[in-house]
Length: 378
Image 1 (tube, rainbow, N blue to C red):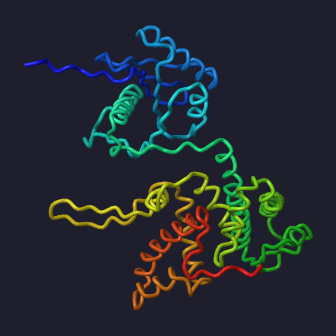
Image 2 (image 1 turned 30 degrees about the horizontal axis):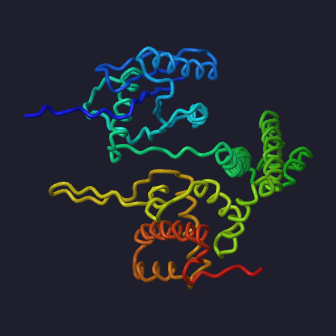
Image 3 (image 1 turned 180 degrees about the horizontal axis):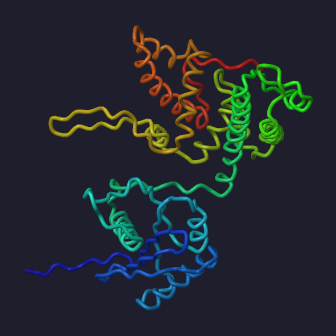
C-alpha cells in the first residue's frame, strides 16, 4: 500500500490582528508549525504601529524561511478603526480580509475566557478556515474606497444637523413650559427673548438663570441652522459627476426625493452587486427562519448590514405607496393587505422595501424603470 502523499498549498503567511486602543495583538502562522506565534505591536502612534506591524511580518518571513515575495493574508475585525488599516496594508501588497465580528462563532458557555490573545488566535482559525474554502461560517465586509467612505459622511452630517436643530427647539419649548409659557420656537424667538417679550404664565419676567440658558440654546440653534443651510447649498456640487447622474436618475421617480436618492446612492450603491439576493442581504431584509425539530419560528428579517439604509428604505416604501399607487409594487401591497390590520401592513411594508431596493438597483444598473412607475414632470 502506497503511503499517502501530502500536497502542500502555496506558502502563505497567515496573520490575524486584534485591534485595541493601546496596542495590537498579532498572531502568525505559516501552515507548517503546530503553534502560532503571538506578539504585541505597541508603538504609541498609530502610523508607527502600522510600520512596526509591517516590519514584524518581514521579520517572520526571514525567520521561518519564507520567500520575500510569498503571499501574506491578514484578517481583523471591523470596528471603530474602520478601514484605514486595510487600505494601508493593501497598498503594501498584503491581502486583507475584514470580518464582521458578530458573525464569528463563539462558545455558548455561561463563562468563557476572553483575552486579546485568545481573540487573535480565534481570528487566525477563522482565516485558515476561510482560506480552505469554508465560507459559510463567517461574513466578510466589503472595504469601500477612501472616496466612497468620505462621501457618505455628508448625508450623515446633514441628518445629525437636522436632529440637533430639532433637539434645541424641543429643549427651548420644554424649558418654557416650566414657567407655564407656550411660545413658537421660530426664527424670531431669539429677538423676542432678548427684548423681554417672553414671560411667565402670570406675566412676570423669566428667571435670570433660565433666560440666560435659553439665550445659549438660541445661539446653538442658530449655529446648527447656519451649518445645515450651508451644507445643503453645496452638497450636490461636492459629489462626483457619476454620483450626481445616479442621484438624478432616482430622483426622476415619483416618491423619491433628491435627499433619499443621495443617501441611497452614497450609503448602498457605492459597491457592485451580482444579483438581487446580494442587495436584499446587504440591507438586512432577508428572512431568518428557525426550523429545528419540532420548533418552527419565524424570526423576521436578519437586520444585518447598514441600518441607515434599512430605515430609509422603509420610509421610501411608504412614500412609494402614496405617490406610485399605479405601480406593480403598490398594487401587490394592496392585494396582499386587503382587509389586514395595521400590524399586517407594517410587516408587508418590509417586503415592499426589499423589492424597492432591488428595483432601484436594476434602475441604476440597467436603466429599467420599475413596472408601472411614473416619472416626475421635467
